[in-house]
Length: 179
Image (cartoon, helix red, strand yellow):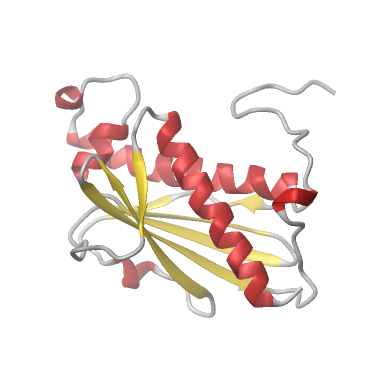
């Protein structure tokens, strides 16, 4: 399978995982192809995951109103800035967890790193070198946020089965599987 095909598959998996995450948080989300404005001066978070064949890093640039809208179990006006600053790396962690679960369904295990948050920086400042970077934009209640999926394919023979080829035998998010 060509690396371009793998990149396209990973992009689709990532878009689906992003939509699933925010829908699970009670938000209505829309993938935006061409943003109408640039996103700057917002909290950032990133997290990496990898294996012998593949390295991924996802980065989020999320304005405070979206962090408030997505924060679980609280009214939007009751969420402090400190809680929101702690929420963005948790969003990155949950999103990478969804990516990991989708890749496990396709027979590929990843080891996740720890999320980090950044303030007063731009997305380009936190992207790793040597990766293929692709930015994705989403709208949540009229607010735009930006994500970047950075991919490094280490094994030139790395491939993923198509959606039609996978069987969903995984446990749901947050479920416990006993062996």
